[in-house]
Length: 298
Image 1 (cartoon, rainbow, N blue to C red):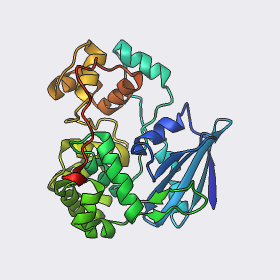
Image 2: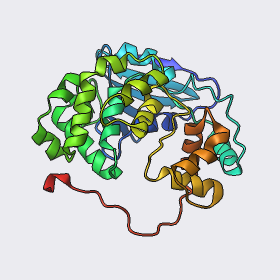
Image 3: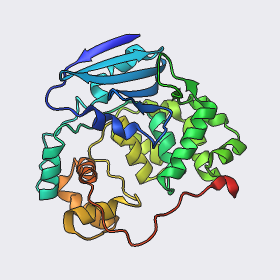
Image 4: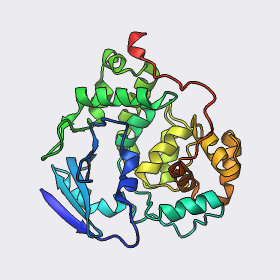
C-alpha cells in the first residue's frame, strides 16, 4: 500500500471531482463507502490499481494498491482538478452565478486514461443510462480483474485493450450492447496505444472522430474526463439542450440554441453545463420516461 497527503489550493469538493467517473449505481469500478471515502479502480501505464480518496481536516488523504499505485498517487492532484484554471470563467447569468457560489469547490479533473472513459461513453451512445450501465456492469464482471488491495467487495478493474478486442459477439449480446457499439469499442481498442498517447484534447478529438462510430458527443464525454477539458460540450446529448435552455431562459432548446446560450462562456462551456446540472433545474416532464431496452431479448 502507498499513500499520499495533499492539500489543495482553495476550495475543493472531492466528491464532485470524482463523480464523472461513476457509471451508474453498482459500478464495479467506483464506490463510495459510509465514511465518505471514494474508491475507484483504474488501469495505469504501470498496471491496475485501486485508489481510496478521503478528506481529513481540509487535506486529501489518498491510499493506493497494486502495480499502478505510484502512478495514480503522482497523478492525484490532476485527477482532483489541481490544474483546472477557472480564472477565465465569469458566471454572468444569475442561475450560473448562484451555482458557482454554492459549488465553489467544483474542479474538473483529468485522468489521462482514454479507454476507461471511452468504453462506457460508447455504451451510453443513444440509449438511456440504465441500459448502458447494465452493459458496463456485465462486461466488467465477465472480463474485469479483481481490484488490488482491500477494496470493497465486488470492485473490479476494467480489462486491457487486448481483451476488449477479443470479446465474442455473443457476450456483447448478453451484456445488452448491440453490434454497432461492440464494433466501435473493438475498433477503438485496436488503436488504444495511439489514443492514449494523445498530448492534447484537440489531438484526441481528431483521433477519436477519425474512428467509425465516434462523433462529437462521444469525443466530448471522453475529453471531459481524460483532459479535464472545460470547454468540451456534449453536443448531441438527449437531455442537455433542454436542461440548459430551461435553466437559462425558462424554455427548452436544441443543440444550436444551447450553443448560442453558452457562447458567453466560450472556453468554459462544459463547466457551465456542469454547474447548470448541479442546480437541479429541469423542464417539466411531458410524458413517460424512455424505458431501458433489453437488447438481449431481441
